[in-house]
Amino acid sequence: MDAASWDERYRGSELVWKAEPNRFVAEELAGLKPSGRAVDLAAGEGRNAVWLAEQGWEVDAVDFSAVALEKAGRLAVDRGVRLHTVHADLTLWTPAEATYDLVLIAYLHLPWPEMAQLLPRAAAAVRSGGTLLLVGHDAANPEHGYGGPQDPRVLYTAEQVADLWRPYVDILRAETASRPVTDAEGNSHTALDALVHAVRR
Ligand SMILES: C[S@@+](CC[C@H](N)C(=O)[O-])C[C@H]1O[C@@H](n2cnc3c(N)ncnc32)[C@H](O)[C@@H]1O
Image (cartoon, rainbow, N blue to C red; front, side, top):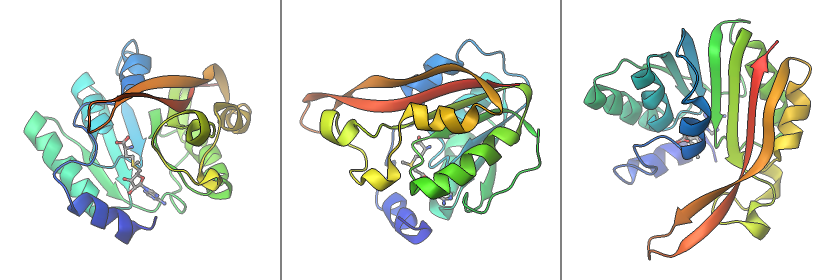
């Protein structure tokens, strides 16, 4: 989907995603002492970025949907935290190296060649000792999980991501993680996510 399509999707409803952080983001980062700058890549409406700001991080929220970033900014104001929104296409985004103490990527699904170019740039943007966390719909999700994009060209496994990050980081966790989901009718499902948690060397 291009930026205009995402803008349209975000314009259509009050909040497409929930205002609470993704469960893996909250679980994986809860024990991490907020210390400095964080960047949320493809921040959307800001549920994770705002939660990070509430924990005490100084947060940049990057997305190419202006509508999403406006909603993220409003969510931050409602919650009484500061958020620095950055309107940028991540396929072109090149941060200065060793700028951030935390890089978060949650549910960003670009065609794999574009993702494979972005991931090393994201790793290089983290300072030594800083944290990288990626959560996304796993490549096995269409067949064995629930929801999310069904096009295999934009899906990946934790191992694919970890392989690209290994030259830069120590991998703490790289696995397929199950996420309980309740649909609009109240039925329970299990979604499969790719989860990679790493520390920059
Ligand atoms: C599924 S949403 C996830 C939003 C957020 N990370 C979350 O977990 O709630 C995917 C986001 O990726 C953004 N996105 C997709 N391609 C992008 C690109 N090339 N550059 C910047 N943002 C992009 C979309 O605008 C959308 O907000």
